[in-house]
Image (cartoon, rainbow, N blue to C red; front, top):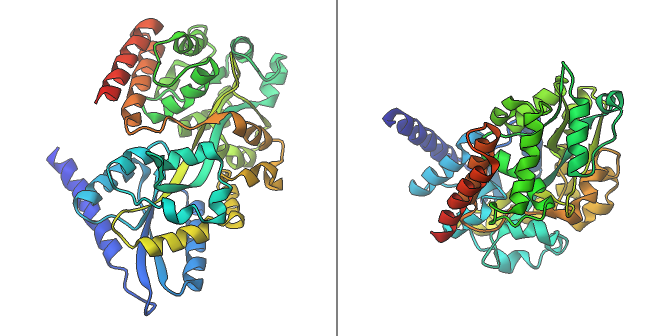
Length: 402
């Protein structure tokens, strides 16, 4: 335990030093730091190109970039706050935005950004992920949602169409299951990833997020349990992250899976003949928003950070960035952007009017744990669906009572 803490503190000190070592190569400019966790070399390089372009044209601000591992990112924010070594700008998962805003980590930027042209075009639902108690603490940097991505050849061989209802999904998954591949899979790992993948089915069944132990909860979790019990969904998926789920699809082990747009280029480059369809509906059509927000850290170089944010949020620039990393901008303009009118992109864009953000409450991270535990318990057979939902609801109720 002591060694682990020492490692965290050592990393935090290194980050702090990097943030403070910004030797002013450009006289008269204020040096600021941006933290992000993009893992691929291409995305890191592309973002750095934007930063370099901004630095070249700004007369008063120079942005330095620090890349941190995703797994350590929240820990570094917490340690950085304690050590007074936070950056000026940071990327944050949109479901975590409100929790950090409630902690007082981010700057209230409402009065400044409401006058920006880019702000006027943000989709209201996505913008909600940036708010706390009606005030704005970040802006959407890139957005995604979840759909069903399927192997066209496998479905054709099984003689089934892309499913549109829960019943059709069960039937199609069973028909597509062979000795070499499963019909359907999700990321069921005990983390935010499983909550994220479960919510579209729960909402499609008419669920309200804080009422997991409900008819909708039973219907959505029973849907997954049915496919696991009949052998059309692999038991191993309770350990699969979304990245591992994508690898299983690429290797031909799964016919249909829940996935976001961020894998489109990856699948295309792998030569997969894939299609995209909406999450099957029950009582309503639904999907979930994901993505990252860009937040200004409180008490830092706010004016300079906002200068970069406004520049980067220009639609032409942010849309180019989002398309490059297989996301879409949180702007109404994305709905008519020609880049997103292709066969694989249209289902994601067409679902924008049916997508919801994960509930904007500081309690959300703890609420999510209730979902994660319920999913794990039911799918591993440790408890019945009813028992799993009741246990998950107890965790949610406790989180809301704090």
